[in-house]
Every structure is written in structure tokens, then in C-alpha cells.
Length: 285
Image (cartoon, rainbow, N blue to C red; front, side, top):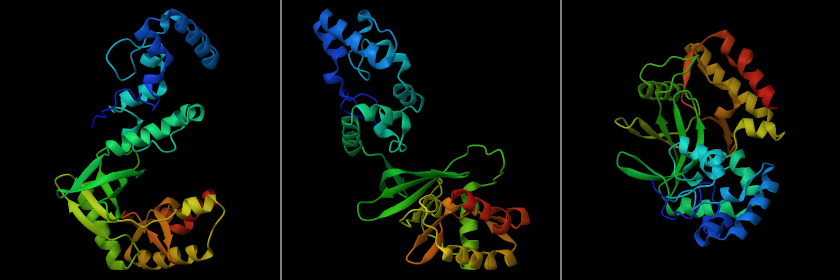
């Protein structure tokens, strides 16, 4: 995906208005001097007037040393092989970008406009979905909040990154097998809507709302959640199973606590809710 407005920098700053670019295009040495003095003060490092040569961080031509080699946003974008932060599903809440946005709030508006103009899309069985944001990365895949223009869904892209403490076989088949196992037991979960085996993608119902982890951090626990997890355990333990009891995997909606992952494993006491899961809930409370 390529953003067409090349004058918007990787971080969302408008290079068209940058004094370094203006000084370069007009060969204005006086502007180079004042810009160097200002940037020295803002960055706490010495910047000389002869460093003020730049045509724009996404344009061909000269770059300031900072824009070319030192800018953490530019470096991050290059490492991820993106054009700008607008292409990154982790843009919202990024602390690196937030440092720039704190001084120049317009960067977020510029990036949102780029994102709107160049929305990332993914397909499931040839049906196209627009990515709204990255919801999270798990052991088996990346989960994205997506939309078809009518409703919102969760699209999970299976990945093959190694995990130091967990071994998968066929990740997609494991996901589907676990879903059927838990569904047959009666565990409340988002519905599986579609499977794209060649691309290793699944489409799930989106259970909207903050996770239990988020609610606990906000000081909003509900005693009924524990009762509902214990009821799930009453179905899981006799079947010789555990699920991932970490509180990010649960979302309450309309009085029902949903387990939004599909992962389940053979029962081990050390990893059941009473011995492991409840400790994670207490850490988030």
C-alpha cells in the first residue's frame, strides 16, 4: 500500500511547511541558521546550518541527518516496511508517535486522513474487509478489528512465529478444532463466521466492549464474572480441558461473559483457573 501524498512525512508532519525543506528549495541560508538554532534548542543537540538540507522525508533527494538516520518514527516505519504510521495497525496509542503528536497535534489528523485515503484491506474467501485496528497478537495469530461497511468483525491471521513456551501443529486446524470442542461444551464464545484456508484466516463475530483486564484496571470488577468462569470450569474440567484464563481473553456483554479466544489445552492443575487464572485476574485488579 502506498500513500499518494508524499509531502506528509512518516510521522504525519507536513513536509511542505517544514523550514528545512523551504530553506533547501529557496537556498535561504538565513532560514537555515534560524532553523538550526531552533532545532538545537528543541532537541538538546547541536544542529549546524549546513545540516538543514531536506526535500521531505518521503521524497527523493537530500535529508537532514535526523530525518534520515536518527528519527525513531522514520526508523520504525522503515523496519516495518511501511510508508507512514498511517499504515501501522498499532498507530493508536503508540508512545513514539505520541511524543511528536504532543508538540504537533495536527500529525494525527494528517495520518487519519492518509489512513482513510489508503485504508488497508484484507480478504476472506474473496470478500473484502477494511482493517480498523490491530486488536492483539497471540501465540497463533494476529487479530484485527475489520468491517465490511455494514458490521464489524474480528479477522484472525494465523502466523508462524515461534513461541518459546508453546508448540503448535497445524495452527489453523488447531484453532478450528478447539472452536468445535468448546462450542460443543457450551462455552460462550464469538461465532465462527468464515474460514479461508489458503490464506490461513478466520472471521469471527466481534464481541464489542472492554475486556475483563481493562475493566479490572479501571476498578470495575463484577462478582458475577467469577461465577461465570467457575461455571465454564465446571464444563471444562470433566472434559479434561483448560482454556487460557488470562483476563484479556474475556469480554462481558449483556450479562454474559464471553471467552473470545478459541484456544483450549489438556487439563493440568497448575494451569487451571484456581491455581493460575485467578492470580492473573488479581494482578490486573
